[in-house]
Length: 80
Image (tube, rainbow, N blue to C red; front, side, top):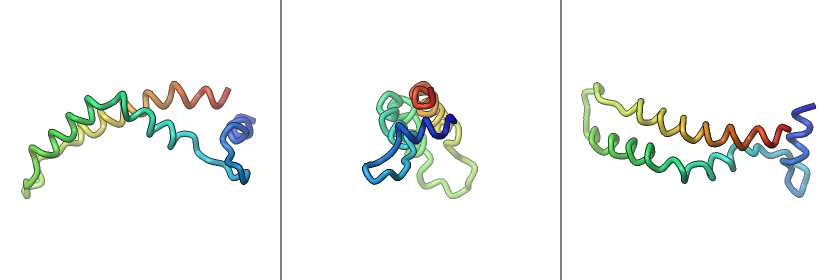
């Protein structure tokens, strides 16, 4: 029932279902610029490290956590 309701709001002109999460992710990237800048700064800092010991995993997940949190609040309105 929930899926049918979601598809009702998420169809293209040719009635093919689309995933609203992709569009919401794009819209939610703008409010998450701070974690993105932190990730990009880390990536720049470790550029050229060939040892493999340095990484930016924490910053990467912080960025996507921000995006996911924003998407979650909007995505569930499609399911109601």
